[in-house]
Length: 280
Ligand SMILES: NC(=O)C1=CN([C@@H]2O[C@H](COP(=O)(O)OP(=O)(O)OC[C@H]3O[C@@H](n4cnc5c(N)ncnc54)[C@H](OP(=O)(O)O)[C@@H]3O)[C@@H](O)[C@H]2O)C=CC1
Ligand SMILES: O=C(O)[C@@H]1CCC=N1
Image 1 (tube, rainbow, N blue to C red):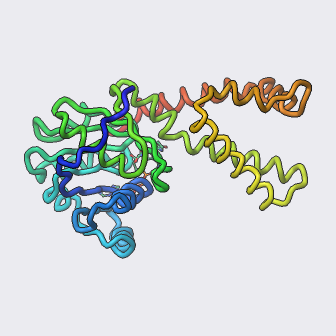
Image 2 (image 1 turned 30 degrees about the vertical axis):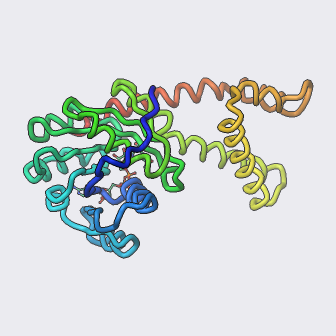
Image 3 (image 1 turned 60 degrees about the horizontal axis):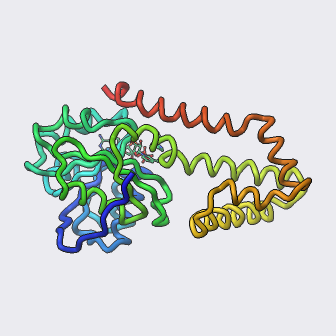
């Protein structure tokens, strides 16, 4: 995987439409605004008028039908569920100006799927972001389609760089990326929930347990990022001979927790691969 080039300020970004104003659509809109994009350069569409009213009120961006949004911009970001993708592509295909870049963040939806349902030659990019983009700590992986040139790829990367880190990856790795970083925050939150419960089981007040766990996670993540040490080395440093940590880790091993993580992420990748076929 290659890290992307630094931002080139000479390349114009243009207007962006986000179709699908759910969790990720809103996250992306907020990130683009925090990164300095003008609200007037953003158009948002959602099938719920109530949701659109909330987005307009909250961010001051333009709102429009999917067809109108797609017609008036340089880049269209598709942030609907994979199951809704075919319908959205049918809605926008005859409204895109030639050369409009179409970026999909939907799990499982391939660039071939998008290209097959859009006008011949449409540049598309497949992206897998994640929810920490909400705090500008996102991790996104971008793969270009057949007609996505270097400029289009740069634009797609730049959109995601607004709210975190970006990697450029071959599309064959997208299902794995979806299983690891796309879904990844949920696994971490799951572990956090379990540790908080454990603290309560051991008699700690819930607030105390939560504070202990959240700061421990933050500290451990910061150590991983800032020291560059392998997680095995960091784990070994916590594990005093004959001590408490080894007693806990042995239980995790006995209960096949590591194997469960591997199997879980295999299941997520398999599901990602299935989603395009389920999308019609
Ligand atoms: N959530 C996450 O952590 C991540 C999600 N993704 C991907 O992002 C995409 C969106 O996920 P997420 O934000 O969680 O989903 P949400 O359901 O929260 O958001 C999707 C939004 O799109 C709307 N929508 C559906 N059909 C249309 C349409 N035809 N025109 C306009 N809007 C429409 C939905 O309306 P309604 O509510 O009525 O269905 C909903 O508001 C998915 O494809 C997912 O795979 C990628 C990475 C991470
Ligand atoms: O659960 C999902 O399908 C989406 C894709 C990655 C994270 N959430």
